[in-house]
Image (cartoon, rainbow, N blue to C red; front, side, top):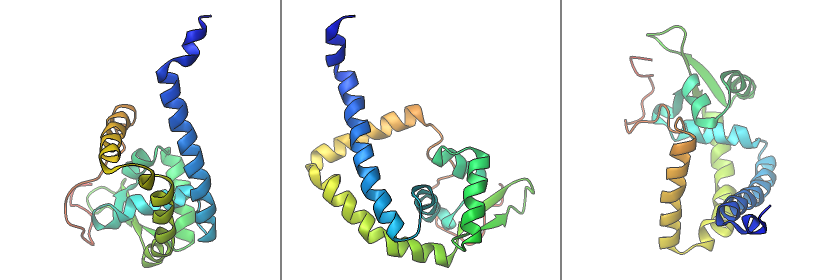
Length: 168
């Protein structure tokens, strides 16, 4: 085998990305535990809170989180039992339902977000100059869109509402 393959910048790029992700994940996990949420529960709460009406169709939530539909169902079941989410039936399609953040879920986010943002600033965005961060965000969006095209499924620029869209 050609020894120079180990110095390939593509391997270095992916390795650095994986190492950075692992380091941030470890810091986030410890902080989430302080607030009684898992990493996937935090992601679900954030995805819903950032969506119009603080809700997403279950299928869109699955696509955005890279969980299977059954995986999303299990997480939503647990979070619903804990009072963080509720389900809402789609009025135009009985096969479809929405996951909606409850006031208790928003409260949990309000408690968790300051520490989360502090970690992001200290260990990620604060390490980069603004131009470097902007270029990296552009690059990460390109890669994300290529490898995970469903990452923004169900997201729109519509103003939040208490009712799901007429067509589910």
